[in-house]
Length: 282
Ligand SMILES: Nc1ncnc2c1ncn2[C@@H]1O[C@H](COP(=O)(O)OP(=O)(O)O)[C@@H](O)[C@H]1O
Ligand SMILES: [Mg+2]
Image 1: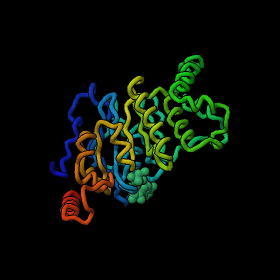
Image 2: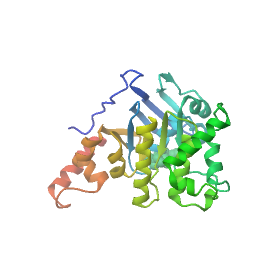
Image 3: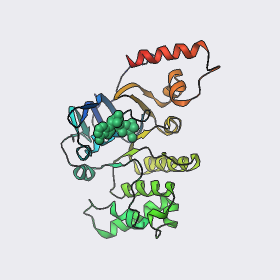
Image 4: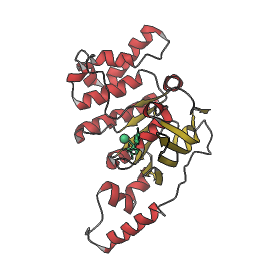
């Protein structure tokens, strides 16, 4: 395939099949710093889609544009549209979006360190209006997905491990009963075994609770194992997208993102790949 195809599959598909579509958005920080330069992507209802790219590519900015958390960073969506569950959402507040079923789990986990794991989970229910009994039931359900959190329910979050804090952050998001979670770099700083455990839980939440995920990751290998479709961002643009299987087998992706170039790294192939990369950046 050619590297620069941008066939965002679902921007034209019906809202019944597409839960989220981001259409050609531009984001500017501080009125002058252009960071996203026309990003489009789509997440099918019930899907797991990966947003890949190196540090600084624009993954977090894309997620915050969707969840409307950019304003707090002096950032602004200056072009394009964002449609969630059949409705334009680019002018909503973050809370209104959570009420509609879309919530972000921030990079770096962000638990309240001085609250217990259970208290942290309960803060996730703050937009709900369906009463304590329903909230208690959901808490039990969360503990079934995250047995480690049940064990640690009375521990102060600040004293739990990085993996437990990441689970707590995802569990707290689940307490808002989301249709979709925007998950920002859950693997960051965690041991591979814990990362795998977390991704397995994400997979279960997706399959049994029908939660859709947009998963920002630098860990391309792990993300493409669980996502069905992926987008690769470089300096604020989607440079490649496709089904996860296709991305895993693509030579450029292998070379630049999976770190498994075929054969000798000093081969002619590497030079060719470098030129190809130059072409996709053009
Ligand atoms: N609040 C901000 N103000 C100005 N520039 C920012 C801000 N946040 C991020 N950036 C810049 O935007 C670019 C993309 O950052 P980010 O979205 O955090 O990338 P990623 O999540 O892929 O690492 C980077 O060049 C970063 O320096
Ligand atoms: Mg980031």
